[in-house]
Image (cartoon, rainbow, N blue to C red):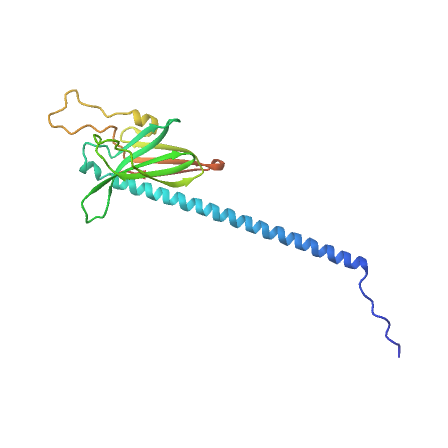
Length: 215
């Protein structure tokens, strides 16, 4: 019967090879995990942006939809108009809309949508008559969407098509040479039946939405 020889262990070279393989596997696993985490952060960030954008479009849609009845409540006041203001001559939209509960007396709210310092903002507050002091002061501003490079507006005018905000702000409806007695005041701008909003975000992303303005 042959006696059992001494047990053979791992050589230094084998240990170095095993350690190297483990290090490679660890590095690949870490890179894979880091890539997964970065992808998750991008997805979450993009999802938050789309959620904010959807909420912005939904709010604008509600504002425009509730601005239509104001024409009957305040026939002498334009319920929707485009204005060029600010140091950079940026276009903004100003409107009057219904507010409050449906079972309560009709209340009119002033709303302004504008781009300021890369943030799409919505200002709102109680409407004041034009002859009241500082009718547009006292609005509460809320940030709606950040990372906006450019905000473009267009309005759809019947028989004329889509008109950009700058031209629409200067466009006035035709007036009769001699208005009839007790005639209602002519609105400040031609009536708009649709609004197109185009949002240019970082990295050149362009998102747009067409919202009808009708009964």
